[in-house]
Figure: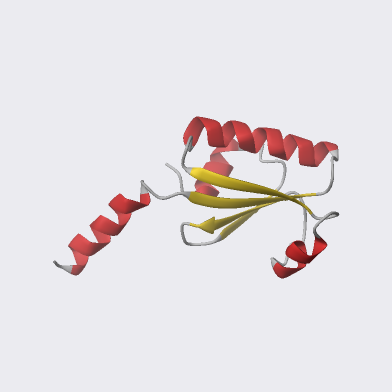
Length: 104
């Protein structure tokens, strides 16, 4: 199998992959609630059954936020598939979120 064929197969398998996402929020602030709601809508419409979303409150789990170098909230971290990406904000810009996730 050539390198080209292998690359093509890797991309084809990416459609079947599960997205592992972490959304860091600050309690129940209006910005955090908006980010959760917006992201849930985007994921339900575009990645139904193909994602795992962990919502992490930086007040309740500060150690995880430190380990992930969270500088601002709300912050979405795409762990898998590669490359890892970080998006900051209320996730209201659907096109930007999808681009950040690498979804067409």
